[in-house]
Length: 334
Image (cartoon, rainbow, N blue to C red; front, side, top):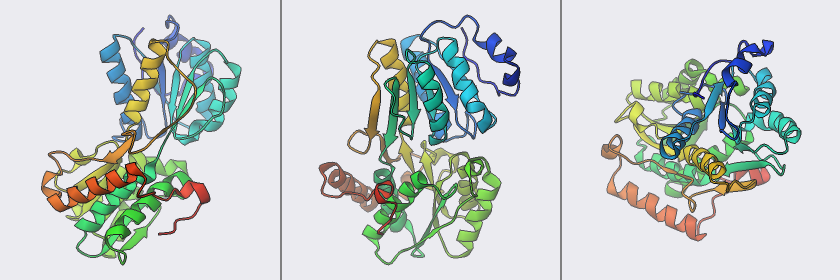
């Protein structure tokens, strides 16, 4: 069986999927990407990288698929499950409803969802302490800012994204309590993750107001945030994957969520007969989140900045600093 990645335009007929997965071996894993596509340079691509690592190290194979709209979610999962794939991994909170329905229909199949919790006995739910990694990049933003005004651009007003925002604000204000943090949404719904043009416009509006560091929390649309910041000679901050390479010298850092690790672990656990359902929480202590440092941003990070991040990391891991979780009470005290 070969890995495939196709849009699901013909799925309604049932023919395309049947042909593509015919002959699939039992318990081959599958990955169905969220909106924004496989190569979004962010969340989906991180999952892809984890699957590719599994393939390279295990000698196994997997199948993957890009959907083109929300209406295809339930049908895509069901088609993979009916052909014997396991585990079937779906990255993104927008999969929760479809997965809840289909996983109950296939109790012997294993499923994995990232960024949401589906409480079923055959589902592994992987969630991250995004607020902890965002706290670290907030520290860096405040230390790098010359204007005392920084920005954050979430895709839309959604509580998971506000977890990033709140952690970012808290980290920045731990450095400079007077710092101003502007927050502007790309759009009003999930489609905003796929609109880099609008994200660039929103970013430019923040830069026009004096912002000189902008954190993108917009998935694939975030490429527009980073591009706009670089074009203006300002600093952007990437998300999910290490995006420092996109504009070396203009990406201060990236808040990494190790979706690749979660994907690799799930696929490898299944192969080794060690798959377990339940909720897995990955924070700084589990090396599930963190700020990215590499050659691409080395000239932007001073020894003092690196030391501040290391000190905060140690205090968060020890419990001395507890970064507020927006999703716990839907408030952001900072």
